[in-house]
Image (cartoon, rainbow, N blue to C red; front, side, top):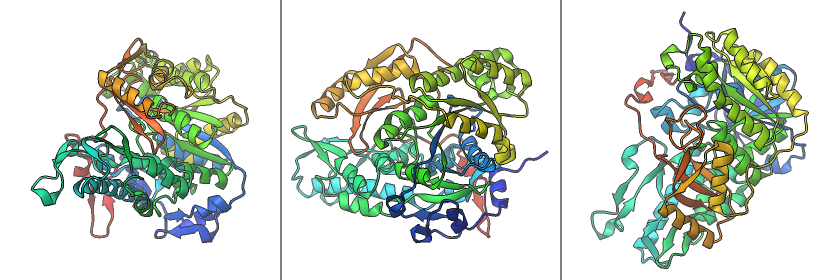
Length: 557
């Protein structure tokens, strides 16, 4: 039997006009800016003018990802549809996918099966142009920086101490390290340079964490782009770039409204990776969603050690948010891979591999319930090959820790496949919780990194390179010592080594470089071999994508 692809399912769905979707949120027509029939931007004035009480906030996160897949976004979307099916007014708030990973490595953020946001192709491609605006703002700042040096360098910028990179929304390893300004005096000042993927730009993090246009401009102004010959930071404000950058982001900062296959309003806005930045949709979109419904379902990137950690320790701290419940998504298939099973053997019952892989789920579960002290339900994204014995093994382990497990079939059944999960989420939302952060902001940068490694990853400590030690000392002397920490590490392991799957212990995390994202308001600690400009795989996804004479796209998932 041939199953329809994600894109075929999405294209066969008859979408509702976006103004009908907006009506479900209570957002008036005067705040809706339509981008065609099925997409809209919502004017931020609505958030300012709205006097509605905030609804409940539900965070969806997952176990450590494997090639077998976990279905976190699919579960997020299916859960929101299920919540509406049981009579709970719900919206969903999601990240946008980056164009680069979609063309290079499968990594869309529109869900799958019968739990998708649509128009799926638009969302996975250019959408409303937000990422292009972010790239333009990033590269305007780079151009003004280099032009300042070319025009006499009044600020005394040391070209050897430039920290700002250009960016492009594409996986292109060729651009990681470049030399530019060649070809003579009129072509600029020669220097080493490089590119990040757009989602790794600090502009993206600023964009996602800003509360309004005024806050956006303030954050843009704080961005450190270089240091002078006497080692003083140079900011975007020093370069007089803030106003023009904000103008480029004027429309992008307005959240995008689309719909799920179940007709649930979906705010899709912003999208940094959790192993590079903070991995969530924008603060503005989340706040808008909380006003638009009684329940908001949102997600954070990759596993709970990355996306959920940054959502809780960075976004919630910055925006004053407090989740009411957490959904931890897992699959039996992925747990068996963590236990050593081969991808080709996941269709067969393997209780031994499952038992060996379960510690990964349990560690994430422990972090959510005991470190962050939040109520949690485990959602098993069920596959037809999962046996009752395997499912029962997961249920028993979680039950022993006081956490319920609910089966989810939202990929195949849409919202109907998530009703039991929805009912459990509603129950958890009624419970009071003692949400707390994994660390406080006292005690120095290195201490906060070490706390995360020991508390969340369960490593034994950190190894800080001599370069990172100097960087930490410099940042603390410049007044950046009290910022939250964004650890950039592989998503495939609790450690910084992607080969150490399941739940490794007694490992050391290597801190190679430490830098400040002063506009975003956090310190970035780079570990292992993490890349801020990924490359394409041997067989890029782009090889399978096409469009016909009627504009119908194929091969995109």
